[in-house]
Every structure is written in C-alpha cells, then in structure tokens.
Length: 562
Image (cartoon, rainbow, N blue to C red; front, side, top):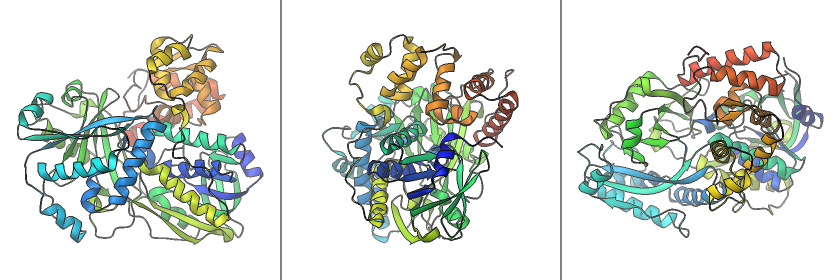
C-alpha cells in the first residue's frame, strides 16, 4: 500500500462536513463547485480519477437533443440548448460550435410515426425521418437555440448541393440538413477544471478526493476508504449526495440502503485514423439514423474520426466494453453513409464504452428512455438526508449542479446567493477573441507548436503552465505534446496519481493513438521522476496501464518495440 496522500490526510483529519458528494463525474463535480461557491463545507469522493467513469465515455458533444422533441421533452431541450450556449461562452477552451449534417433519403417519411410516438409516448417500429419532419424539428430547435447568435440557424440542401458538399455521400440521399450544436474537445479536462474551480472557491472548505470510495456506513455516517493506502474514515455530513451515475444503486447497496432507481444502457465508440473517411465528412459531424432507428454519428475529431454509438442494456456490475459486434455495427453504419470509403479494423486506434446514467425503464426500449434528470430524497447514513441523482448528461451539468445544490442548501437552511450562469470555467476565463495573438504575447519562451498544444489543453491557464515550464529544466517527453515539467505540473496541480491518468485523461495521447513506439515507457519514466516513484512502482504502473489499454480500449499492450 502507498502512503496516505496529503489531501486525503487533511480531509480525514476533520471529517465533519455539511455535504458529502459520492461520485466525481461531471454532475457530482458541478454540484461540488456550486456548493463551494455558496461557502458550504463540502467533501467529494471519487473511487477513480475525476471524470473517469460515465463522464469519460461520452460522444464528445454538447447538444440540445433535437431528437428529444419527438418524445415531447421540450423542457429538457430548452434547458439543454441554453446550457450549450452558456458553455460555448463559459468554457470556450473546450466547447466550440459544431456543424452537424443529417443526410435524408425521403421527403414525407415519419410524418405519422412521430406524432404517434409523441401522443402515445411509446416506442414504435423504426421508420426513417423524412425531410419535412426534420425541417419541422429543426425549425422548432432553432426557436429554442437562439440567444443572440451563439450558433447559426439550420440550413437545408437538395441532392445537387448536398453531393457537391459531400462527394462521398451515398447516392440514395436526396437532401441534407445542417444545424449546429457544440464539440466537447476534452471532457475529462473540463471535469478537472470544474473540480479545481470548486476547491479554489471553497478556500479550504471544499475538497475533491480521487481514488477514495464509499464502502459502507455506521451510526455516524458514511465510511470511505482511500484505495491507495487502505485508510478508512467515517465522514459525518448533514446531506449525502449520491452522484454515482449508473452505479447509484450499487452505492446505496454498499451504504446498506438498497434502491432500484437506475437502468443504464451501454454506449460504445471507436476512433479511426483514416484520412479518406476524415475528408469524406467535410469537416462536419454526420448525424445519421441507422436501420434499427438508433441515431449514430461519424464525427471528425482531433484529426481522427469518432464513430458511435450503441444503446444496449448494461449491467453496472460488469465492465463496459466495445465488442466486435459493435465494431461491425459501426462499419455497417459507415458503409450506409459513405459506401465507397473502405474501413477496417486496422484503422481503429482506440475504442471505449460506458454506461449512461438512465432511470430504470423496465420494458421501454433504451432509445425512448428520457435523458432528463430528477432528484430523489431519502433518509441517509447517520441521520443525514440522502439525495440520489437519477439521470443527467454532459450538456446540462451546470443546471443540474445548481438544482442539486439548491436542494442541499434548503436542507441546510441556507440561501443560494451565487449563480454559475455566467461564471467562466478554468481556462475559459478571459478567453481571447484572437487566440493566435494571445499565444504570441502571453506564452513567451515557448516554441509556437508547443504553445499551441498548451493553449488547446489549458486555455488561458496556459499562461501559468508556461511560466512553470520555463522556471526549470524542461525536456520533451512526447515531442511538442508533453514534457517533463508539464508532468510535474500535473502531479503538483492536477491530482495525477497513476500513469493512466496522464495518458487517458490529462492528455489525449491514448485517444488519438499516439502511444506507440515507446511513448508509454517514456511517459512512465518521466512521471516516475516527477512523482518520486521507485522502479517497482514505475513497473507496476506500466503493467497496470498496458492491461487497461488492452482490456478496455482495444490497444495492444504497447512496448518500446511496437
């Protein structure tokens, strides 16, 4: 076992809190930040790294959910597009407008099915949505989306213009509709920014702990265990918020208070390094309805192509994996949209899957389950009130956190004076209108290519990172993408505990397939120096990371010889 980390020791030394949050996904972190801003003494515990569970398995989109209109979820769509527009402003370093194109084969299809779905509120046999139905939906979507011009209105094109813009598009498509949502470039880093902002706002009253899990309860409160040292402590809190996502029922079971709230579904994705497929997308996401009625996407992202997603029943007790059957499903999807663009498994550089935190839905088909959220009050450990979060998605995390915080404050008998509506997040603060000019003036002493990487990764916080880099002997580890001093920054400022934290979440090296040729070993060696690991710990981290990459992400165990 490792020694107790300083932040864990401090949190355990004074274990009485106003609020304990279990779960360090984006919704738990948003609630943490909101409560910290209100001056609440709050502790968050996450059994893994921040944003490493369901929040790490997203489609990398911030969207209003145009298809939710067909289910009559107008409140969710309105809130989602409002929150999307806020994130484009408040987190401009990670959230940017994304053109999204729907290829369409028919004019009238779905005009009867869609109203029946809405009126009967049940799943019907899949039927392609035609141009008129999509036009109605996008016109309504535009009315929800307008807030002074965060994103443009949708556009429709006929066959000729559509195939001029997308020459590889299957000839059977007669129309295209293009609208805008937003791209979430680095979800795990945005989650980290929310956590660090919360701790800064709390000024010693707010702490977010990684690799600490809730393992039980006693007559005083929730028993938590530091997974690194094995140390346990009972946390006493007046409010316990269970923000465990798809594992909410399992957390309550561990606390001795079983529930049957959740019914999450698995969504898988693959990442392809394929220049022809990338070019075929024309720089926009292709949002497409598969034959089974599932909406899927082909998404140009970080010089790669992200393809997803599935919607399958899942057991949260089992690891979520992208199967070979799902890969075949994705290839069939690509063939329907771009039939002359060959794709095969040799182009896959990364795959991943996660479980959506959906409510229990019994016989309702997964695609019809609401993506909205609700808060359930219940008696909690040690006389606390427990708030269980059911549902939630990336796009609405700020509003959800505000609602959860408000309910917790009501229980505490306190006001909610500070709003997060216009509050910038992390490196989105003072975001420049002209990033190139900002980089040139604010990152002196940093080579241009390296400076561009820092700005993309940190936003305006890159200024502080650059000052840290030039204050010591900084040596490249992965070309322009990572250096020894940056690893030291991550250890000191960003709660890096394991090698996988760096490769999968603090950077996009694994996601983009940039970990071959000895990169994993090089990062491990440099991280060992930064974190003070001995050779035994370094080798253990290497073995653990290789196993994780192979088992969960389809990446053969990389070595210096690969």
